[in-house]
Image (cartoon, rainbow, N blue to C red; front, side):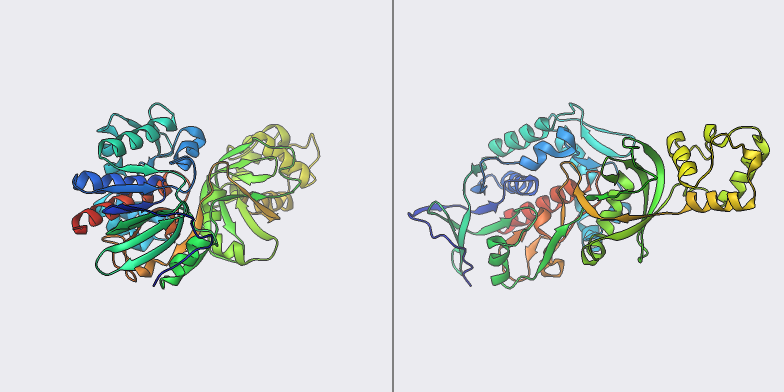
Length: 422
């Protein structure tokens, strides 16, 4: 089959290579470097359709680059992937975060783990990671060609593939690594679909919730250390810190919920509901409130928040529920206790929309995982075609997990292509 895209190129120039990597992102670079280092005799080229390579690496983590996560048990690591957790267990036994850390540190880029497990370069500069990848690619002899949008790919039993770009170059190659990042409807999806690959529709996976509610109005910047968020109508619930923003709710708890519930949310009508348990570690909120009544009977409700809840949030909850200023703990009755306990354990918010989380623009969807051999990342449909990174129907929670999937799949693809390129 010869998948084609529109806009036929005007001229032609033939270039022979052993391995062609389509996509100049994290997965593509790691695959190219791995292949070239595994066999220095190979000719490896990266094609990037735009003017800049590693653009997502540059802006990730607020410009610091969240390289990976300090989770070194593959069985635990896969629990952070809503899609791909089964398929990635084997690959993570071959290349996991500890290998990523060793790889960068052995090349002069030490990493550090923060309290929540996210790992960054000690420099706190994404440029450290970008420069490292560029330097290693250069040292390994990898060619990098920008402004090289793919126009057509032809299969040849004897030669492998012919890849024709928009500017008229024809690359005759034995192996292709497809690492174009999150798939969008268009020529890329058409190319793979025409080769028989089923493309799972891409949708947003990491996003924050747009909410208007009197409980959080005007409280932007307020954070709660630990909440549990539930996607109403499902069993999907996630714990973690929560942040109130000027448009609604964000923070790890919300982002995790958006990742695990991405498909359900996408299929829901214009709005959906989520419940927040503000004190998930407290099983009996009523008992805790009654203890406050006994210990601080003369204290005013508005001046003493229970369960280490942020005072501004507690005060706003009291106001929304109609408790007057000056009311003391001893003045609470059973009905009051039940009302407060219920609100602390469950506040329902209607979510009216989604907002992209800063530089995070992960999607779920892409190449169906059943059509990929995860020992080599090779297509089961097209011999010699390999995949890595977000082009696959793999996505993760925020925290460096998506990059780790890119490093792992890129590494496995690079090793496999080098071993079978001749």
